[in-house]
Length: 310
Length: 312
Ligand SMILES: Cc1ncc(C[n+]2csc(CCOP(=O)(O)OP(=O)(O)O)c2C)c(N)n1
Image (cartoon, rainbow over all chains, first blue to last red; front, side, top):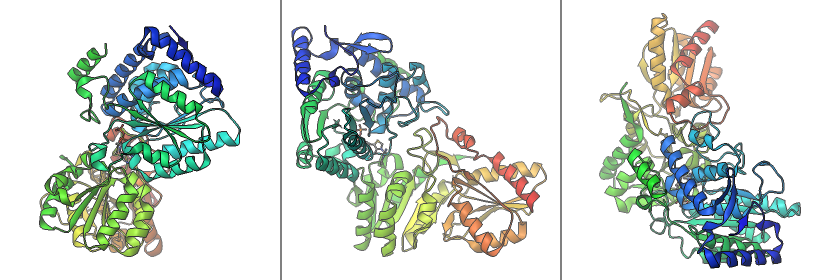
C-alpha cells in the first residue's frame, strides 16, 4: 500500500513527477483499482482515501441538514476533486495556513463551501466541531468561503470571479519566481459568466503554467441542464483555442483526477484545465441529478443518505 | 402582522401582467426558481429568456429588446445584477432612456444564510446615481405587486428592490400606490419615521411601542426613493419637527441620505438614520436574528425617536 502525505507530489520537479506518477500507477495497478486504498494524512491520523471520502460526504450531508440551507448537490459533485487536491496533490501545511510557499486553491464555485470546509477540517485547519455551526450567526463558517477561515485562500460566492483571482495569484508567483501552483475550481454553469473567459484569455496570453483550472462538469446549473440553458459544448475546444492544455477526467474517480493533475504538472508554457465529468449529488443514489441542487434533506432522507455511505 | 412573500406575489403578478401585455419579456440569469419568475416561464415560454449565469449579458439583452419595442423585465439577485450590472444599466439602458424594468431580489440582508457575498445594501445608492432611473423599495407583498404595475405603466427605466422570504403584510385590498408619492401609514405629531422595505413594518411596531411611552409618531412609507416625494418630507418636517429614517440599506447613499439631502437644502430638521452602518453582512440561520444583530429593530427605531426628539 502506498502512502502519500501533504505536498510530496508537488515537491518533485517535472521529470521526477513522471516517476511519481508511475510509482502511484504501479502500486495501485496490482492491488487496488483506484487510489481509494491509499493512506493519507488526516487530522485523525492516517486513513485510506476511500474512507476519508465517505466520511467527508457524510459530514457535508450533516452540515447542510443542520444549517437548514446550502448547496448539497454542488458540494457532493466536487468533493472528490477537492479531496485529491488537498490530501494527495497540493503542497500545504494545515498548521501554517499562511505559509507563503503553499499551493493556493480558489473555490470559484463558492456555493460548494460545505465540501471545502469539510475537507479543510479533515486536513486539520480547524476543529471538525466548527462544521456544526455552518451558517450560524457569529460562526466561523460563513455561507460562502471567507478568507478569514484558516485554509481559505479567497472569498468567493459571487460566480465568475474566482478564475481572475487565481490568475492574479499565478502572475504574482511568476513575478516572485515562486514554485507553488494555483488551482481554481469552476462550475460548468459558471462558465456562462463572461469574466471567466476574460480570465481564460489572460492566463493563456501569459502562458501561466502554474495555474490549473478544474471545471466541475456536472451538467446542471441552478435552473436546469447547462446544455438547455446556454450550450457550453464543445467545452474542451473553447479552452484549447484560448491557449490552454485541456485534460478530460472522471471527476468522481480519484485515480482519474490524479492522472489528470499529473498531466497538468508536466505541462509547460501554458495553463491547464481539467474538464472533470461529475454527477451532482454523487454518492447518494436519490440525490444524484439536480433534485438536491439546493434542497435540504429532512431527517429520514438524511438517515437514508448516511446509510448509503456507511 | 400576517406574513407573505414579496417574490411569490410578484411572480404571480408577472403572469397576470404577461397575459394583459404581449410586449412583456422576462429575463432570467439562472435564478428563476428563487426569484419566482418560473411562473411566467411556464405560462409564456416564448417570452422568457434564459440567459444563464450572465448578468451583464442579460442587461445588455434587455437594452436591445427595449430598443426593439419589447418591455423587458430583468429579474435577478440584487447583488449580482445591480452590483455587476451597474454600468450596463447606466450605459446601455438608462443613458438611452430605454423602457426596461430591473428587479433586484434577495436585497439587503434577506439572503441571511448565504452571507456577505449575497447581501446587497448599496443597490439603492447605485441606482439612485443613474440619471433617468426610478428607484422603488416596496415594504410588503401587496405593494411589490403595485410597484410592478406602476413601473409597467411608466415608460422608462425603473429599479424595483425586493426581499427574499416571508415578511409582514402591511397593506390590504384598498392599497393606493403611486410611484413618487409617499404614503402616510400612521398619523402622529411628535416625530416622523420615514421608512421602506422590511423596515416599514418595524417602524409601525416601533410606533406602537412609543404610544405606550406617550410619544405619538407619524410613519411614512417612502417606497419611491427616486423621484423622492420632497413635498411630503418638507411637510412632515414642518409638522413634526423631528425625523428618523429606517432602511435595510447602507446609511451611505440610500433613503436616509436622500431624505437628509432634501432636509439640508430646504428644511433643516433634526434627523437620525437607522441603517447598515458601513459594515459587511454575515451569515445567520435566521433573518430577524441578523436584522437585530446589525441594529435594524423596532427598538433601535424607538431609541432614535427619543434621541431626535431631544435634539429638536
Ligand atoms: C454571480 C452569481 N449569480 C448567481 C448566483 C446564484 N447561484 C448560485 S449556484 C448557481 C448555479 C451554479 O451552477 P454551476 O456553476 O453549474 O455549479 P453547480 O451548482 O452545478 O455545481 C447560481 C446561479 C451566484 N452565486 N453568483
